[in-house]
Amino acid sequence: MENIRLSEDQLSSVLRHPEIKKLIEEWREKRIEYHHKWREWIDPLKIKEISDEELKQKFEEYYKIGAGRHSFNQIYRDRITRDIERFRNMLLYLLDESVDITERLNEILNKNGKYYIQGVGKALVTSFLFDFNPNKYCIWNNKVEAGLGRIGWLPEKKGVTKGEYYLKILEVIKKLVSLSSEPYNNFGDVDLALHILAVEKEGDIALKEILGIPVQKDLGEENEYQVMERTLQDFLKKNFSKIFPSLEIYQDEESDGFEYPTSFGRIDILTKEKNTGNFIVIELKGGKASSDVVGQILSYMAWVEENLVDNSKVKGIIICQDVDEKLKFALKKTKDIEVYTFKMSFTVEEFEL
Image 1 (cartoon, rainbow, N blue to C red):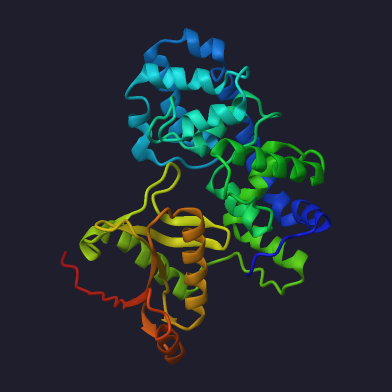
Image 2 (cartoon, rainbow, N blue to C red; image 1 turned 90 degrees about the vertical axis):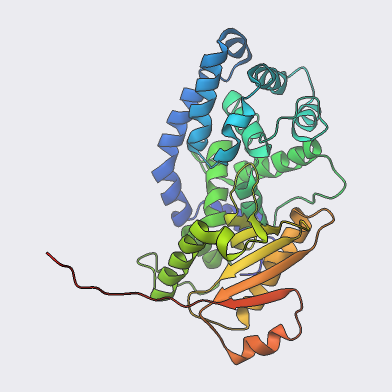
């Protein structure tokens, strides 16, 4: 579904949609419970007082479960607290409200920043800020951006620092809060609504209904092609380096590259070429792929080019069981997309007692 900028009336309807509210109700109590738990130690006075070991333990608990709200890439967990004093100083600087928020974020998120730590990205930093003061600071992560993109309200990134961009995100989130009904008119529940819009089927249903697009409310079992696609993805996750030795899975502070969220849906596998650094978007199809998949993967490639790329290129790979004639013709005009086919086999053996 093509992203369209929703009007304020449409936004209000989406945020109040029964499918959205149903999931918020399912998840919000646990999220609030975790927030109160984290609030006990995410405080400058407490951070100054606790021992190195206790600070490390509390952070590891926080990071392991994504603060009870979202995911952090676990490969960075130990690296972040390797220098525990630097980590403590980073936290204290982040929560120092005598310093402008844009300056704080720039000094922490930029690689040349005074308080930069590898693995500490926008998701973790703003998660800390939210738990410090949930009425003042919103969460900013990949799924927030994907959700805002789906409703056409993602701010322009070009020409601004990361700190300045956070202020733009904050301004939009405040607008969404003002359009939400009680008791969902707060940063926490709007964050949850954006998560639902970004990656959950209920979010897709809500958007389509508001836009007058026919909806097939099938939230039940996956069909055979979806099952096959999931099986293929699991297989590739376990054997990726053997099948594509020249590629590596893309890693950032939030994602390991599988089911990577974008404004147009989730990229099945986001990778990079080891020797060039070029991004490779991999799209999986459990059955026969048609020309429709070209438009889908090109949308993902364009999103990666706009949001993740500096000087590298973006290419695409389609992995499917078979290819139809329309796709064969479409690929003749597209040099940056390759196609691989897969075959599945099973053996049945008699069990001997």
